[in-house]
Image 1 (cartoon, rainbow, N blue to C red):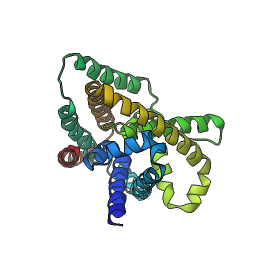
Image 2: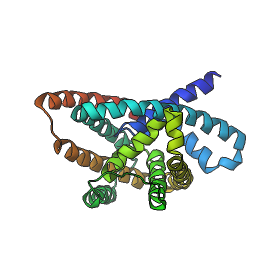
Image 3: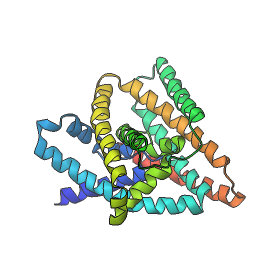
Image 4: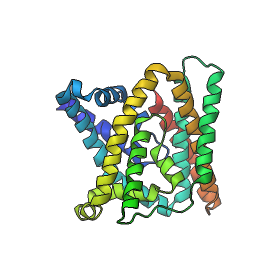
Length: 275
């Protein structure tokens, strides 16, 4: 029972990382010592079905609890103190970078190309993305879009150092995802959003299976290149979110408090970044 309670708590911490923009839930999983076990359980699920179901189910229970109740807090903070909250999140992202750099065993110059390729890719994504937010309708087009959002969420959940919420902000679907997560704490809202949950869950399941196998292969065969790419993604996420922060209205007090919170966020991520 003690082991299961510990696993639920770890799942809750990982879930909080999914809710907060800039925190990588998978990186928290690495620091808590459950990432490789989870990847192995998903990639080789049928080798030990009973053990893998217990492990993944217990971890997922804590994750869902955290997402359901943590989303409400994040919605409130973004509505009433946007700039300080966002700078805190940016500090979280910046704190991820040193731990990623340390994971590269051979600092080959060719890795720089992969780093800048990732930076260029995300900045281009931001440039071509729409400034409008995604508002779902009861239509097949929206359902397919939600399926894609679920798949993308799974990809960012599995890859260490990549914040799914940061990507959602770039693509304009963060509000949708956050409100969908938040509705998990209300049975009536769950029923109302049931079609969205079905397609999001399907995309999430497909993404977890596919990306877990892909990451297992990449870490086994191209570990340095994989981390170089993740580092580029991390830096570009900081650039994009800073643009969004300074494009909004804020006071000097907001900025001062935000910088202080950014330093706190940085130190927090440094602490969680170690294996």
